[in-house]
Image (cartoon, rainbow, N blue to C red; front, side, top):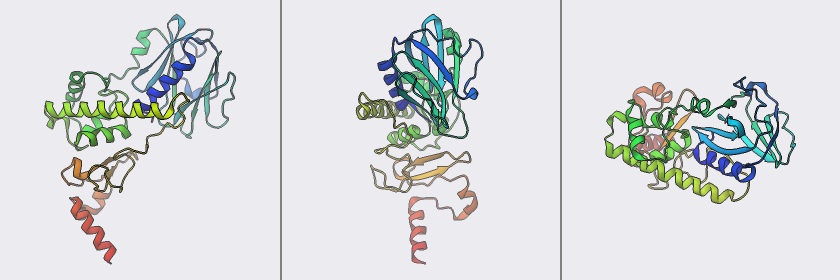
Length: 303
């Protein structure tokens, strides 16, 4: 699912190409995309695009006459940009917004079509879509207060859109690694200094990646929107060395097929966090530390 750094690039790219452009038409290829009926999906046609913003993980296009189109890309949704009237891809295309300067096309490379389009009238309707999460790049005080609302693991708190906006599985791993905090540490066990350190890590991590992706993309349309980036410290790097200490990156796999990546040396004082499925299977044989895991691996190789 695109997170804040990739979504920020989409905002940049749409603004640069389409701010002030007139919407000439909307082509809907997949009716399941539509989540509202009033105003109708084509209500913004004939209006100019006046602003592009993020509301959580939604890209919101603001048109004249107080009309809005809110797009949630979910996991596999992506945006393409082409000349006016560009074809909507047959298998993955969901919709196209035809402006007088070019076509903004929504595609979703997944059999489960989860992307969503809301066409709305009035700022209050847009605000109603906001899950309430604070901007992780904003001031520290609201961030700390949000994490204090519930006693959750830090990993779950960072990825809960009701608490923190536009952070998902990938960048939460990177933030926690930078903060040197265990993903399973609970917010209720964190003092203010720890949560302030987490906020500083969030700002540093997200600012770094937004800047890096902007530099890599330049003036081009962002086409490489992914949760796996070369240069990440732990996300997607299971078994590879931590760039800071050299220890093997570990992971926890969840039932919903998400995973959590972490460095046991940098984040958990050498302890291995229990994997929900494998640790239940192994029970008492589950290694508790990185040293135990390495010893088990040596024993297996010696057999």
